[in-house]
Length: 260
Image (cartoon, rainbow, N blue to C red):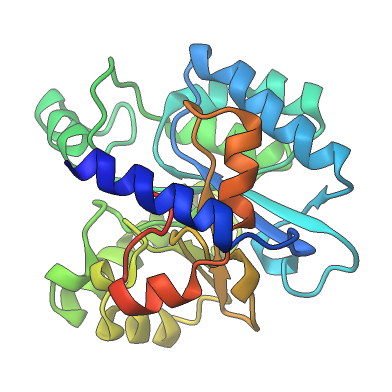
């Protein structure tokens, strides 16, 4: 029943709520396993073919022309293993990284708990400190995503701030640069809470990335960046339809995705 409802919502919004793509796109992914690389390459090639250049979160609101922020959430060694692919495609990405599962610093129990939180069901391998540093040195950007992938609406503001500060401190120690951008875990307003947003503002993040589909047309001023997930299981055409949806009325009414 849930899938039928989601399909009906998606078709409704595809038919009645699509608009030409805005000049500022923010598209995000999670994994980049070997079998997902062709779909990722197709996404990047489509974006480039339609005149978008790739920018960091910090330049997203100020860059001139058609720009796209490509980002990844969580923590997967597959990102590092795809460095040659990023070079081949001519794309630089932002990696919003959890630090609780750095390889060599956590045990199997911690990794199993983390995989349960992010609902990852394949063989899991996270990044090491050295791999993060190498990715950064290759020109990619890193942002905060909480240390333990905590849902900010479920913890006190004090706990949220402690977790985020730990995350940022670890990443800054690794890349030896300030971490000034972040992405909310889970990414929907009901999973963040106004208090969680206030924590991030007090911490001085220059951008805060959400993950609510249908909001790309609502890009305003910093710090907010609205992202839509690119679904590897959908065709390029269907993903583009999702990007074109202006789902603001549905999002404001329900707080949920207008495209399933």
